[in-house]
Image 1 (cartoon, one colour):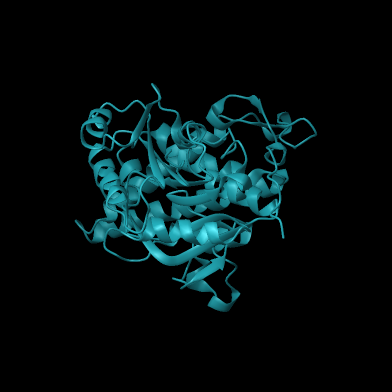
Image 2 (cartoon, one colour; image 1 turned 90 degrees about the horizontal axis):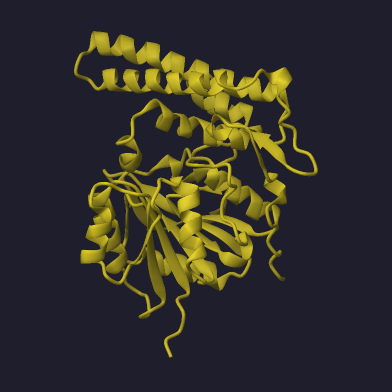
Length: 356
């Protein structure tokens, strides 16, 4: 009788067939794994580019789940998670390419330390450079202002708060607040029946699950012992509508607002609005001075992102009409621009604490 897999790799795909092919090929060609030790699950969010046909024809060993709708990243991951009983799960973006020994190294690291709940990997850009969004510190007003208001260019580095995104390329393994969902390996016992808070569609959900797991007493670690190429944003950059861009803003914003008062929430919006407005002005000026330098594209992105922010902020009810404070029953959110009741972050199943 074949032993059940120890690790399930869950990949959520939407209209990135060619990137998905490269991702699955790298997973298939991984080294250091026993036969049947790993299963790969692709959740396709109703792609229209032939992704499902490609998977079925070229990767018959992969379990393909067709969702029939664009569930988003968080709900797509949940579909894949519920389809496996593996004790360890790796969430992997379709625009990633793993090194040959990366999966085996990640599995060995988390399996050999029963206190590890979540393990993240070192991500590198397409050109081989370090990707700062591999992980970082939870967002605060201090580190957001440092990042978006150019304080790092104006003040001594020794004053810098812990960065939202890693500002160095640390070696080895170390504790961290959050790791990127582009490659996030976790222990089922630490996460429980639901990976992400149901309010998240895409972006910010990796911060939430890391905080929840860490608060339950598990380790959240970042490991540079293996690298994974992440063609950052290529799966997302193809979706340029204002509504899609708004998801980049809404997820981290929702995470930041939990447990904070109205003033902190207003400051969050003000910092990001000022930061992107400044970028729009600066890149527009540089594009006029140096045509063809790529600054025009950055200016257009900043302008579109500002539009997404405005659409999100001003479609909310006024602060004095909102009741977003957590209570014993739950919290309210306007993710998706509709008021609905959702569980408190802390009310999602708290995982059993690791045994000594």
